[in-house]
Amino acid sequence: MAEVDSRAWRIGALCVSVLTGYVFVSSAVTSRGSDLRSVGGDISTLLQDRARQVEVKRSSATALEDQIADLSAAVGSPELEQLLAAADDAALAAGVEVVSGSGMRVTLTDAPRSSDDDAVDPNQLVVHQQDIQGFVNALWAGGARAVTLQGQRLVSTSGIKCVGSTVVVDGVPYAPPYVIEAIGTPSKLQAGLDGSAQVEVYREYARKYGLGLQTETKPSLVAPAYTGQVALQHATVLQD
Image 1: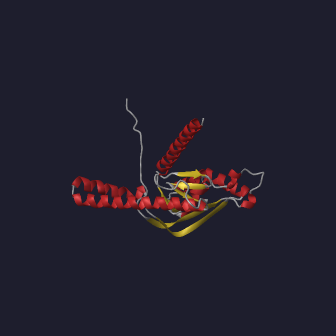
Image 2: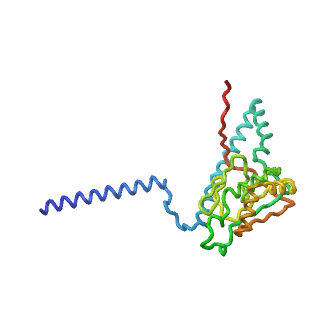
Image 3: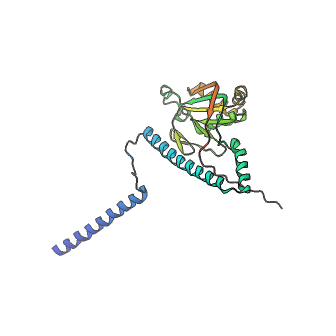
């Protein structure tokens, strides 16, 4: 009987050892050498950490792009020079050049906590992705030459997504208030806002629930160059 108990104990110890090793290996593979749960898990710290990670990767990508540009310039190929010249001509439209001038600043904020009661859906008290996108589209319709969100340049491939109580723009998370700046003729930009059905819906919710909305005319704004990666996908219509 004692021999059976001893054998059972050895088998049990072996199973525990195997299971422990499996957990350690799984954790290492999943975390890829980093902490699975970082210290300081509050939302502000997590947002700052994610923003720093994205900025480091962007800086690395910019450095590599500069190296590519230097190597391309050293080739001395006429065909390559033509392609580089065409790329320079498209730089402004693509958003990869700094733009400055007069324009408008729009600030959107969540409703104050005092407005939050049991009779109101909490979703009505926060700024959503479609609200920000509505203002951005309205400013583009008003002839904006460049638009930024939280100081980040927006281009045709920029993605704005809601993640919990924050908004993620091209991989970088931001918390409210959300500041949109557009460079262009202020009167035309205002006309774009006034003619937008989505902007009018937000204004109605601002009046009803206390969402923040502030628009300002600015004599001087600067939109930095877009530094993210551009990945385009398109389809071609097949001809009969």
